[in-house]
Image (tube, rainbow, N blue to C red; front, side, top):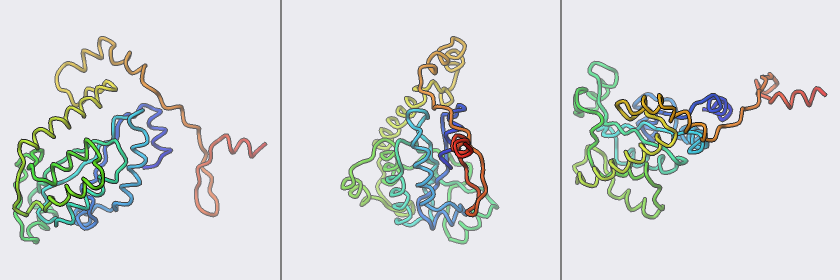
Length: 244
C-alpha cells in the first residue's frame, strides 16, 4: 500500500479499497499465519484514509470476531488498533467459522475448544460488548476517557457475559444506513440489490452525478533510477530539470 500507487489508481477511477485486518493482536495474527504486523496495518490505514471521503468511499476493513482462542487482551488489542486507525472507515465484521480438515481446524482442535460448524451464518454477530464496540468505532471515535470505560466491559468470546440484542440491532441499523449513504454519495449501487442501479445508469443519473464529483489530478509520471541505496522513483520533471 503506497501513496503513489493509490494516486495512479484513483486517477484511473478506483473509488474504494477493502483490506483484511482480521485482528489487532500480534498473537492472533500469528495464529492466522498473517505476516502483516499491526504497525504496518496502521501505515496502510494512513494511505487509504487520505483519499476518503473526497475521492473514495471510506475504506473497508475485515475483522474476525468470536475466536475462542482469543484472550481478553487479544480482543482489546483489536479495539485499540481500530481506535488508532485514521478515519473514516467501514468495518466488515465476521464471526469465525472453520472449514473442516484445514490447518486452522487442526489448530482449533489442538487448542481444545469448540467452534460452530462452517454452515453456520458467519454474518450473525453475537451482541456482546466487544462486538458492539466495533460498531461504535465504525460510526464514531469516542473520547479517550469514554473509550477506556467501554473497554472495561470487554471480555473474550469464550467468557460468559451479558448480551445486548436491542442495542446491537440499533447500532447495526445505524451502521448500515451510514454505509448506504457512503455508497449513494458516489452513486455506487453494488450493495443495493434489484434494478435501482441499472435504471439509474440507463437514465444517465449515475454519469451526471459523477461529473459533479471531484477528480484527483493526473499524477506526474515517474522514472525508476537505481542508485547505491536501491531503486528510487523520480518525477519526470525533476529528471528533465536536472538534464538542463
